[in-house]
Amino acid sequence: MTESGYCQMLGLWIQHRNHIGGRNLTLKVIDLQRECMLLLVHALMACFYFVVEGMLLERHFLMLMDY
Image 1 (cartoon, rainbow, N blue to C red):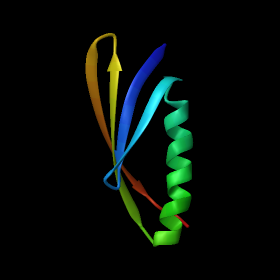
Image 2 (cartoon, helix red, strand yellow):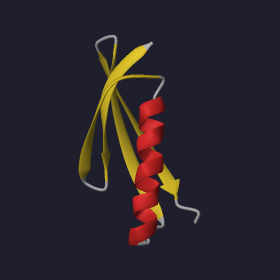
Image 3 (cartoon, one colour):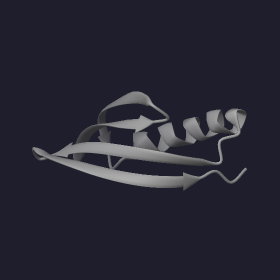
């Protein structure tokens, strides 16, 4: 299944195109986690928006940074 969506993290919008199963989002989260280590961020609220078959889906995640 092909999804298109975007992600809001730390007030920044990151555009995602044509990723399958959220794999690109996972890679983006890993990259952002490395940046959070430099900022000493201990928790991150992520909001993911997907458009799947014409429906807007919204998911919220609280990720704890375990350095």
